[in-house]
Length: 507
Image 1: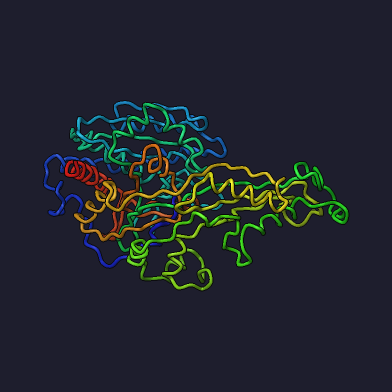
Image 2: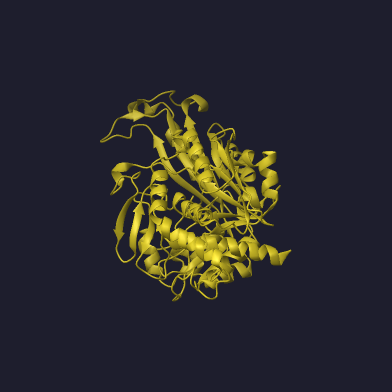
């Protein structure tokens, strides 16, 4: 799910982190609030150990690893943090978790968690991916390294740490909470809509003022991005086989027979070539751009305002030398937010070991993802892809949809966005509004029908390496502009108070 969004935001100098001490913070100076902040500081070592323990139990949906155990662990984490009830809920796939915390408040906030993570190859990591080792990050401080550290167990545990602090301090939360957690986000949230259709869960969400997913939102200069939306995504496997095609071999055969036997691998390559133009990046699926909404003037304004000042630093982190068509940085940023994409994740066919092996494969598979922008939908995109292939003689190629969802967006003036902005402003942290992240999350299940709620991310702190080796989360920052782990939790405390204030003034 996560996407190094700090690479897409900019900012000048910011004030020192001061969530608890800032006189501008309406909650600061409040005795109850101060008790909660003190409890966070007292709990920090234990909180990090809770995070390390959670990292040690990975739920990997596409491999069926720890799917029941991960759900039960998530349920217990919620109960330990103060939710009065939490239960595992069947979804038709990997189970979800539903929990409620009644603080006796007038308003309720919904929280979205994912408890699954991407798979990993331990040989690519500098330390064991499930150990949660604390290492020095030059120029930044101490970081915890482990799968899920930033995506998303780290920021989620920081939020739970805030709840532990309310509980330990004997202070009631300013809002009630509804928690929904899924274990399939990393495979496209296949069964999440089914989970939310449960009448009890749906009713609880409908009582909420909005949905927030904890995140780490800071760049290295301390500035924060508040995202107003995200692209949708579909994960698809295209499979060409002699069996389905009726041509070519039903199994791998000697490559000398290529002179008289069709190749399923070449058949797939030819099909793939029809999906993009000769430039290698412009989608050419029939009707693909029919419902693509162009950027509005306001969205372009926000993108320009959030453009990082150091383009070369962004390129260096990504390991690229130039953008598509050698576009300037701003034009490329417009493209990042507005362009639907057809991406090949991987190609699998025949012999993949060392050296060569003279075979004609009987099967070839391409793993793709399609990023969608408003007003595209998942259903529309899948239908158009199948029709496009069939029209060109590739109707035999299997289109296997493993997961995905449509784009999501929330209004700039929605409560979840405004509460995040107010929290950052009162802490003296520079922030920008980013219209649409290029990465994806299943926010559309909340923002779309039938719920039609505002939903977005909030959080401070830094991390990186999502889906990659050496994933990390900053736990002790050497830069006063950037939050460490305790400050992440404190920001969530202040965010909850701001949600209560925004809800009170908007009614």
